[in-house]
Figure 1 (cartoon, rainbow over the protein chains, first blue to last red):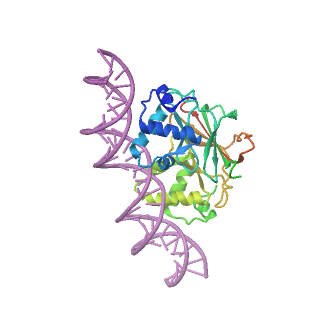
Figure 2 (cartoon, chains in turn red, brown, orange, yellow):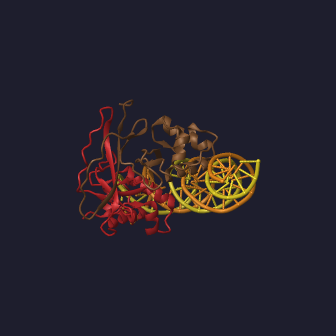
Figure 3 (cartoon, each protein chain N blue to C red):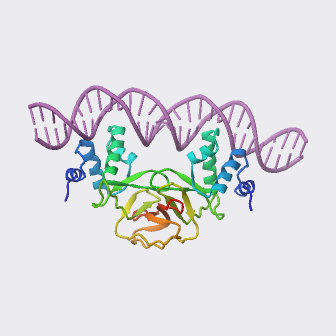
Length: 136
Length: 136
DNA sequence: TTGTATATTGCAACGATGTTGCAAAAACAA
DNA sequence: TTGTTTTTGCAACATCGTTGCAATATACAA
């Protein structure tokens, strides 16, 4: 079990109060979190500091963006293999249309795709929506 | 060939100047367009009216959202089968990481996916990024 | 432990954007 | 053409992304 402090150090991020708190939120929730979600969990935090915290985490390969059709930006923890110079988040995201909870699905491989020759494929972003276990 | 005026009527949208202009933009470009893109093509248009135009088009099944990881909301023309009560935009989106142009790929079927039983899949959103013909 | 170099925070400030209300103008149907 | 309904353009407000800057906190070497 790696502590949030150790995880920050491993990504060369200075440990500060808010960074530990935000990282712990991600570790505890295992869900993609929007800025609003985080603000609810951590009231009285400066919104600009939170903005910069998430930006730092993203730059350093600690979290990645999760996009959805409602255009609310969420973030989720990266796999351990991500770093500041390489993101490696090849997995499906699932968003429940009812409760809006969004999770990373790690154990289903991304499908192989063959596009017409004129396209050079570099990355796939696959978001599946539907009902989660609790809402079905 | 269906005119933009006819297309608006078919979706029960009143034909006004800005609506015809915006719809023509989509018909001519065959690209997904952001609000900023449209404002460049149509300067001196009231931004609120444009906002409501896009909202109306989306509600009535004329355009659909195209999401990408940079979190810039774009819209693209729907297939003819979309209407105000049913969107049917099952296709891949391709975004060029260089020129940022985003297109709908109509002739490649969406892959079949099998998720763990606890998920009820309703919709797939697949965005492929890479290099387009011109940027390769 | 203490001092210092470096990074982070919190605040002000600004622009961009989403959204609603409302009166004037435009589109539609008879 | 006339009356009804919708749309537009503007004001207004909230929210959010972003940057600069001074005060504060962290990391590390001595």
